[in-house]
Image 1: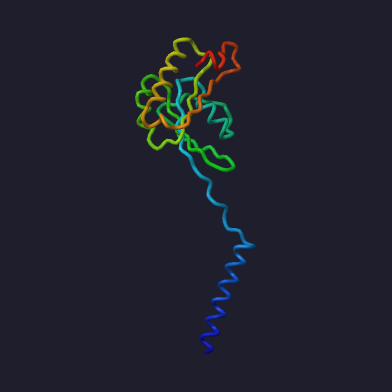
Image 2: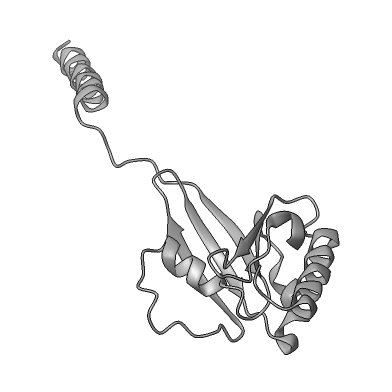
Length: 158
């Protein structure tokens, strides 16, 4: 009989402790969801500067990305893992190798670039929009360098 009482007390202690922890002692916060994005655009469009700003880094000494880089951009409710792909001619042909697993696309273009560069950017954007791994994903198209005198409006760019 005493073993039965001891077992009952043990179960009660466990139950009370569980209730106390649930009510009074919050555990660690739940992990923030992470989303994988790919950031593409021609060289000089401002991809690296954009990500540096989002990560609250100083914009000094920014150099063009050769190949790719990955940055984790923290927000209050989520973390964006952004793969930034270099925009040089010899690198763009490899972009599609980095698309797998992406959940969204950021396309950055220089709205103050030459007509030829703008046409190249349009072609790359259309190619990305039609790619089987990207065509169903959300796209953010950022017309960068709007502060420059030669900048075109969004209507002129698209």
